[in-house]
Image 1 (cartoon, helix red, strand yellow):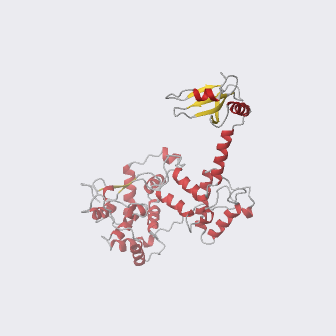
Image 2: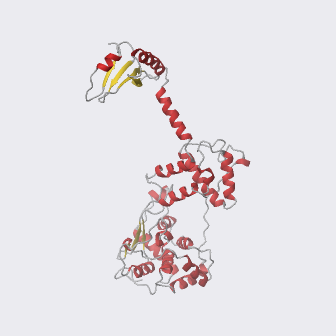
Image 3: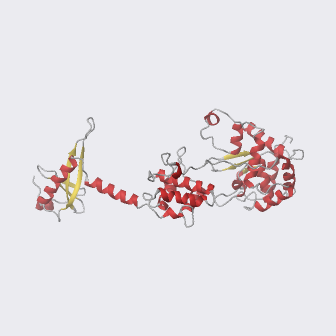
Amino acid sequence: MNLTIKRALAEPTSNKQKLLYDEGSPLGVRIMPSGTRTWFCEVWVRPATTGERGRSVRRNIGSVNLWSADQARAEAVKMAGELLRGKDRLAEARQHKLGAKQASKTLADAVKDYIAKKRRGKDGLALKPRTTHAYLATVSEGGYLSHLAGKSIHRITAAEVRHTYEEISSRSEHSAAFAMRIFKAVMNWHGVEVENSPFNRSTPGCHRIVLKPTIGKPNPIPPEKLHAWWTAASAKAGDPSADGCRFILLTGARPGEVFGGNFLDGLRVGSVDLKGGRVLFIDTKNRQDHTILLSHQALNIVRMHCANKHRTDKVFGTRYASKTLAAINKEAGVDASVTLHKLRHTFATLASELVTSFVLKRMMNHSDGADVTGAHYVGRSEAQLRAGWQAVADQIAPPASVIPLFEGRTA
């Protein structure tokens, strides 16, 4: 039948949409349950590649109240021809809208989008709060990337990136590398590349930014000062700051996991198993739970600070141990550069001479990463790990006066 406005308006509505088609043309009218009536074009599009199925493509033209049947029919024929030639107005409009939206996305918006949606490839976990905070801080007022934060990610130039890098480098090369790694991660995730990017190898050397790899700077307590340090720290036994420092040295635990911080609770009594001689840290830096098997020496310290406390209480009831550590260092004649984290360095240095590298990695709670041998072939039993922690503790503190870890077992 030939569609007319009279026919389109006369068709009664139902509880489902109705489609009426014009004879001999791609024109149709859609009648919705609400009474809305719209002209549309529908055409069967065959794929360019043989073997693929064709598909019906339908595109709206306009309201029956705004287009006459003849006008709609002529528009349907024109639109059908475009669709058969591969031109799709709707798809182009959507792409244009998407492009405009993407073009207006600022670096600050891109960072927020990244931290909200980025997931780790190996386990699908979101970024940790500490990482999220660090990324947001770079595009906040006064942050490393604040000068670029309000610019569209599609309009940031290579010169601006170089200027930002050089400005941060004038204060700290480490901070500059940190900021640029965040910038690269966010831009790569959004699929945006700066034209003549200073990170590309094809960029002339005089304009290229080469980020130095992160290199650790081990700074353990010198072996000849270790006994003096332990003596000075033990003289403050009962003080949560001093005993927390001793615990870090004996176990290799991360300071934030022991004392807590902006994004960490610190060790809680409920995470300590005194009978089994172990503590459990949940969702650690590498997104894995980590169990430390306590030496006799470490157990004595933890037992003292768990006494008469609730499960939710902190074992070491402080977040600020730096001043106490500084006092211990001074008394022992240890350089002030030995920070809380350097106590962890000291543990690793001692352990490296007493256990295998695979056991040490597990004791330090470092990710196996691409270490196929360590991750999939080398077994590390609890007895082997416990012996490792005990061996380190015995190097640090003589075990003669230590209370037995388990009933019937001597120190």
